[in-house]
Image (cartoon, rainbow, N blue to C red):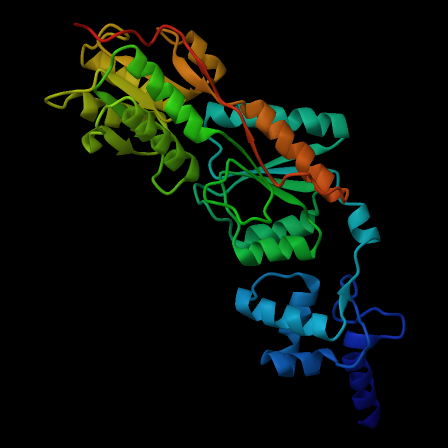
Length: 368
């Protein structure tokens, strides 16, 4: 019996201050500092179990953010340092692209941009989706840590504080492209000038003489939706037009939403003479609704989209739309995340690329 107890004691000490600066419970993670506290002692001070401390050291999931913060603070106080270097200097040859929904032509343009960079860097592009959820589950984080990609790009998705901490703790660089919410200051992000795009689209319709202008946008809680509608409202205000809230609608960024909401708006007693759709896919739905109701575009209804997908130039009539450079955005996100993985700190962690109006045949002055 004494010998097993002796081995157990060595193991407990080895978890915090082995002779070679490695730990039994976290061999790939921490380097002890002054060795004044074992993991068991840190666990006691934090009010948690030793396995929980080990999880924090190894950057594993399923630890509450407040608990993780408390344990991290104690580890720092006792001089523990994570060992960064050889293991993270040779990540797998993967670049991971994560969509909340992988079902539209919009995603194709983003994939094209990321693939351009992956090909140049000799990386393999990996695609995944969160089945419509804006926040990724912890099981996804565990999978990322197992795959150990060179970088992760999240499209219109958000990470919780715990998920961000897990990726940071294991040196997995990540960038959010077109963030769903307002990312924290230290979260790198690539976006576009959504407010300006909404303003420009509405200003174009006002300049044509429209005063009853409806807007269909994406989910109310999504950052780009709010920004585009804010731009729409600002354009109406500067144009001296009172915003009619009955003409402001939210839906998904899908064809079905453009069709259903477009039909509702065009069936009002005083329907809009122009519609600004939240994206080109919604605009396609508006086209279908207008056709079913016998409204000609642009003679009876002007339509503006957002994105400038390649198909927008082939619609009948070709769609006036706000171009956001999706391929360029994806390329910028890929280069940013790879630079972060190489230890290069960017000059700016939040970048917005410019939008521009592409005028085609779907807009005209209102019928007199």
